[in-house]
Amino acid sequence: MSDLPPTTQPGRELALLRAVRDCLLEERAALERREAAALVEVSQRKGHALAELAALRQHQPGQQPSCSERELRLLAEECHSLNEENGRMIRAQKRRVESALGLLRTGSTAADAYGQDGAPRYARSPVLQAAC
Image (cartoon, rainbow, N blue to C red):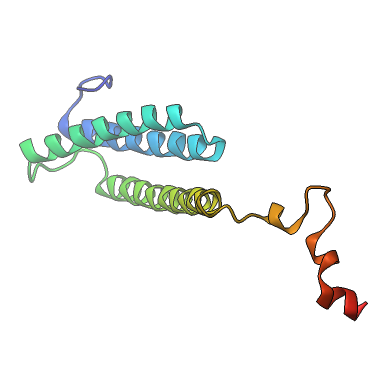
């Protein structure tokens, strides 16, 4: 399943949460660098760690952790916060891509404001010429 060393269930849970956190930090870095391949790879590792964590919790329900319950909760909250931040970054990048695609589809761009000679089209506008 995972490359993490086998430990007790609570220690394993903590190690898996740390692995998820590390993946989320790598995911953010890949998003900032806009490296799709790295993003896919780290997302797969994150998915495996989350799946293993879910399976671990399913097989050992109600077991008292030997590590601090507070530590587990804080780490889970940190993972949630990082995941929310990454989600915001993904949504912002998606909006930029959709906007660029929209410009490509409609053919309307800022370049339309200039003629083939590079002169601004508004300079030829009779309304603007009359105002000058």
